[in-house]
Length: 325
Image (cartoon, rainbow, N blue to C red):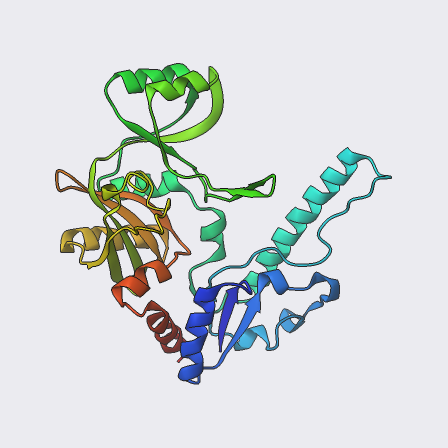
């Protein structure tokens, strides 16, 4: 049987399920945000899993797991009592959060015998610096990269003539403030921006700004690459970060074939990192060189699949079925 680990609202999971239904595949779905801890039962006896609540089948019957999303388990999440000391509440809530994380890992470990398409530890330990170092080690170009927190050091790099961008070192999480949502985009940093900084600031990631012909988003599955060129540099709104979508005049996107030499190196990179699927971001510079930027080991594939007619939801369903068989 195929197990889909996801969140209730994930449309990509729904699209893959449509194909699993079409092929009459044997599957079940478990949504992390609907995994109810208010009614939880988990029994192991004599090293054999007898029963797990929230899962309609025995873990031993699961041959293939697709880790798409997970989210926070619902129920028993926190305490908020005005009669209790605030420091106590914070420490207890932190403890409960860690306990739920460990419970998720314990649940995932029940399927150690199964084939996994994507893995939860890759999402939680997403490491852009590791990805960059590994890409460099296999001969792929990377932008010159700095991790620092010194205004004077940043000034030194900028006055040397280098153009820099900055972006989050981790997965970019949305920030809610005053009923507004803010997204940490990639931004260019100039000498003028230094006036807004303290002498020391939060350790941050900076990279050489590559003057690009276009960006490339490629989805990797089963040793194959499904790539799309994004002409984001033609629009001032998107030329630094294409995620600043211009909905009134979207970037032109077209199917793209990566050079064979680059595909070989990317396969070696993914094997070294033990990532069997995900989205890879690249840039082709104005000088004609390819630069590796980062990997999303979960990977949004809809944005590549739909405009390029790759039908990746169908290909993922067929891949899961082939592994189950």
